[in-house]
Amino acid sequence: MTVQELSEKLRLEVISGGEGLQRTIAGGYTGDLLSWVMARLPADYAWLTVMGNVNVVAVASLKDAACVILTESTALDENALAKARQEEIAVLSSPKNSFDLGAALYALLS
Image 1 (cartoon, rainbow, N blue to C red):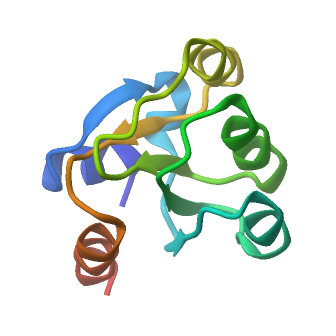
Image 2: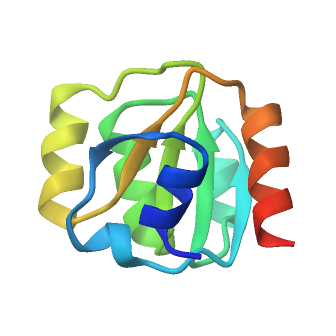
């Protein structure tokens, strides 16, 4: 499933996309402690988090995440948005919490 397909199926708001919307999602990972995520996030996974700063974009780029999904209506700050657009990292948003979105993602990918 592509990031674009996921955004449509889960009714996620696309904050940043570009070519990143065509990435294939291999799985999902939830985490908010950046050092923890940096050590464990597999490539091509959707990353669910409540962090919306430029460091999230840096970790997503470093780990080659398929996309970042901001949960609980977290805002992406302006610096992070500019960097996500520059790196063509898909960033999506939802008012739902990480548990509910993770369960929905799992159901779609299983």
